[in-house]
Structure formats: C-alpha cells, structure tokens
Image (cartoon, rainbow, N blue to C red; front, side, top):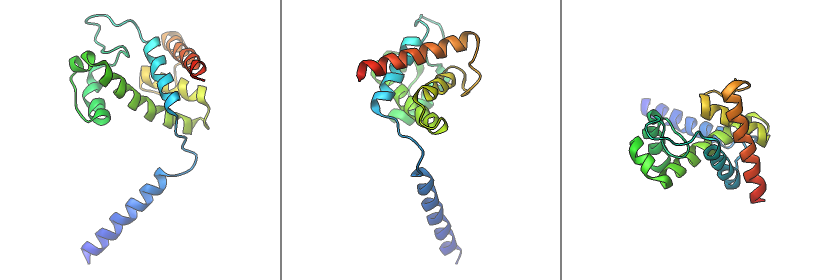
Length: 155
C-alpha cells in the first residue's frame, strides 16, 4: 500500500512539474538573443587584468565557476582552467545567460530590453533590480547598449 501511494505521489509530482515547465508565457529566447547578450557581457566587462580576482573575458568570479561549469558543460572546472579555455567559458556563460534571459523575458512580458537590463543587473550584483545609479547603472547600460547593437548587427 505504501509503495503504491508513493508511486502515485511521485507520478503526480512529475506530471505537475512537467505542466509547470510547459506553461505558456515563459518565453524561450533565441540563440541570436543569447549570443548577443553574451557578447554584450564581454564587451561591457572591465578589462581582464592579471590577478584581478575574476576570470575569462566575461570576468566571472571564481567561487561560482565550478558549479556553473558542472551544470553547463558537465565538468567542474577550476577558475584557472576556465580562464585558459575560452570555448568552455563561452559555453558556460551562454548557458547561464540563456537561463537568466528566459527568466527575465517571462518576468517582463517578453520585453527584450527590460529582460536584458534585469539580467545584466543580476550578472553584476546577483539581484534583478537596484542597478539604477552609480557604477552598476553605468555597467548595465553598457550591456544593454551593446546587446542592442549586437542584435541589430545580426538582423
């Protein structure tokens, strides 16, 4: 009896979870959008300087690299490995950018610019809002401007 109920609960959970995953309104960003955003993050990043504590042309903080690389490319990398492998870094950043842009497209009603702005704020601060002034506002605006330029160049 317990096994039968457990199976029923597990199956119900899977069905409900699949329903939430496929709900309408959750926009799926295009490869063009992801590539434009990834390039915008690279363009807006501070210059890559030796021993600045960040890695790759996207200036990723070291603490998140092992988790992101494991999730995105199936292999946990050290910051030094990440720095040395631009292809792995780009694929990892693209994976995370896609996740965040998809979330923000849903949050903004598919407003491309607002989604890019919120995702850029998150990239810089870990929060989707609060980047309206100072250095974070400047950075976010650079990302958004570069994103728009990259999209226009690809159309």
